[in-house]
Figure 1 (cartoon, one colour):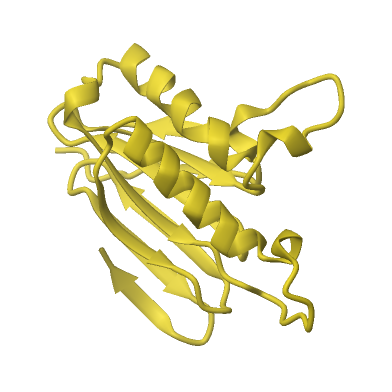
Figure 2 (spheres, rainbow, N blue to C red):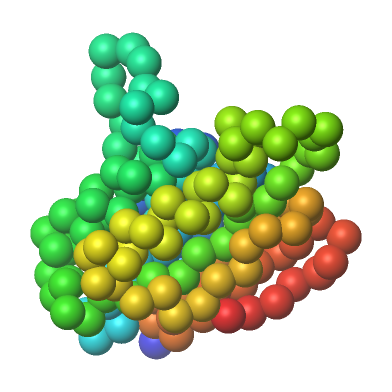
Length: 165
């Protein structure tokens, strides 16, 4: 039996996929959100490290779907389906979306973390993907690991320890 686990690391504004014995991880989630879509029957998962809520904020010649809350879910869905996932079996978990800095203004532009969470939930609803667990909000950074074999999301939160969803 092979007990070796390979960790697929996902950087900021990036996405990737994992199958057992792999796990998938992203670090440095402040206002960013780690969104995981997975098919527990096919044992495949995708993770995107979402930075911003709206792709209309994109600039430059190369568009990165994983960077934005309104495009990341669709990008993950296409990748999962190519790996054999069935859309009717796909579920979601997410963590992050903190408000890392306090501002005196009530400007919506400064609420990046909460807006990321709101937009991801809106697009999960539109795609009829159930959000089965989340650890969002607050004002602490997080690192997350997802195991597609057990479907456990492990969350390490700065100054708060480790929890599992």
